[in-house]
Amino acid sequence: MNNARTFTALSLIALAGAATALPFDATDAAEALQRETAILEATGATPSTEPVAIFPAMPEVEIAVPQEELTLPATQAIEEVAAAAVNDITPPAIDVAAQAPETVAPVLDVAPPAVDLVALAETHDALAVRKGEDGEADAMMMLSDVLFSFGDDRLEPAAVSLLEELAPELEGATALQIAGHTDAIGDEVSNQELGLRRANAVRDWLIANSALSADVVTATGIGEVDPVADNLRADGSDNPEGRALNRRVEFLLPDAG
Image (cartoon, rainbow, N blue to C red):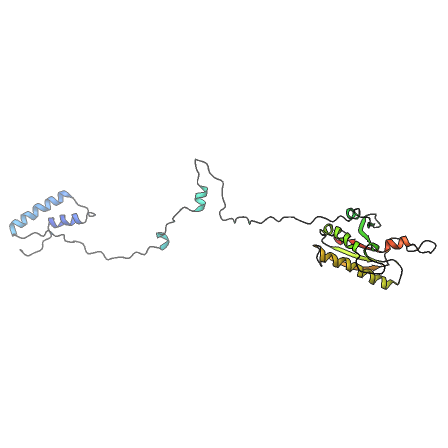
């Protein structure tokens, strides 16, 4: 018995001190201590003061915890923060999922100023306005005698000076048509070709000396077929004044109707 390891009350007390989770009654311990003392006196055994486990060791159990349960949000959801009341004042609901409106740069409306052919025609004696059947002005006329020598398509110096005055006013046009007209002297085909050459002479000068581009200005040859005055008088005699009006170059704005 001297070498025996005895499970005594002292061992139980030590066990209770090491495992405080176990229920422990002080009265039971005192009684156990008295019994142990009596046994020791009778047997001379040496008590063990080391804690002795009286329960089998619990197996280690690995508990798998879902990852999402371990992950806590660092901050509140944006919706919760936006909806939280401050000083008892609840803010209006905010749809944070809605996309911000697309910012569109303003488009500046800087359309060129409209060309007023009537006003231009009033600035020079060599200019006139042609009116249509409805009485509305539909073209500005420049007399060919001011622009060209008889039967020629080369611009005279006086014509260049006049075009220099007109060009800045015509630059606002988005479409400009130059039409060449003649009187009735000569055959119709020749007059149509002369009218086209004169219209092209004016067009080429404007493109080379103003902001008007080649895709804006067009030229056409009309010839003698669209007179604005009679080439002959009623008695069949020549009408020089009428023929002079028919020899002209017209400036038309097709986009104006």
